[in-house]
Image (cartoon, rainbow, N blue to C red; front, side):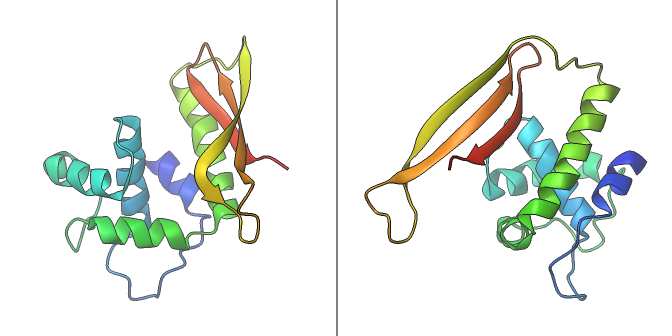
Length: 146
């Protein structure tokens, strides 16, 4: 937990100083939810409520569990570049701690995101490029195609 705290301590908290829930609590619950197959803010709230006893062993959760609205607001307000840097550091530490080797075949894939259009370009959908380490079964990067 100390390693996660040190990695995400550099992430600026975009919320007002009187925010109830600790940013680290929100991020740890979100990461655990995604690692267990969850996909969104509602899944994060359900995961937290189902694992509350376990989470309280290492998270502060002074003001109870965050709601799905809280997860959604926090992740919408975070600086994407700052979160990307912190998340990359987390993934590097995660792979090292779990002995995951990022060697072998790397798959690069492009996709058009259905229904996602940039303002003023309604005829051209958003295109994404994804990089995936096949042996580790881990996404290495995803970015908007030029």
